[in-house]
Image (cartoon, rainbow, N blue to C red):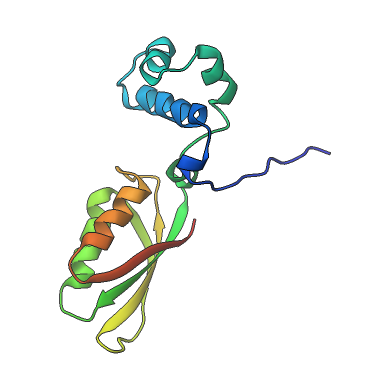
Length: 146
């Protein structure tokens, strides 16, 4: 019987520094800021052996969700144009909205739940969530599932 790996979501600051540096080295390689593993590990301040030891086992949370369906829940003010603005934020980020469900507004606000396919995302999920939370008329935004 093959043992399946266990996964945990852990705040980055709780991890040993080596894991955060491996993630940084991977990011440097993926973005082209480093052309080789040697350059990436040197810029990150780790050894090649540490990079190769952990490179396939440590990755940011948004990478785990990349290419998957993510459920967002938003609390929006009940005012014309707010939902349209939020939908434009998703479109501008490259996200593909699969379903959208808006509850009947109560006390001047409405809950909107969206299932979003994230493979075309041009930013991190965290960055998208932050943009939504900062948008005018958005009272609350969170990721429910992914």
